[in-house]
Amino acid sequence: MTKKKSLDLSSTLRQVRDPIIEVECRACGWAGNYVRAELVKKHGASVTFGRLRRMSALGCDRLVDSEGDRCGTRFPCLQPTVSDGEASG
Image (tube, rainbow, N blue to C red; front, side):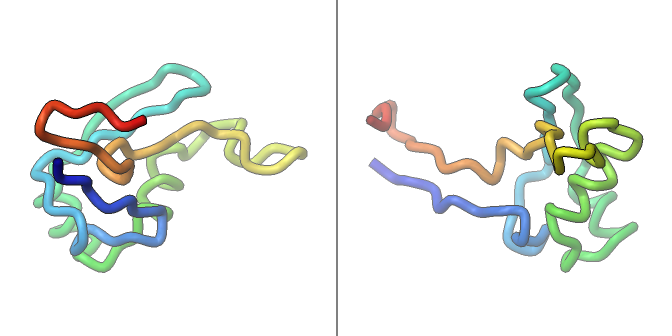
């Protein structure tokens, strides 16, 4: 079993080498993706996922709410995964 390290929004594109960066919002059901090479070319490899999250959620009423950040935008590549067919638990 190989477990992938959990990353957070302070992680950078330099740390995540996936060619396609998926993004989704649990709150509204929106989903999309970015080509990593294009993001690096435009923003540099040191751009954080926090900054990418803000760019992705631009215009979301939940991102800037009177109760704080309630936007559900996240990057699945930052979540830990378990390989070799074994489920975590």
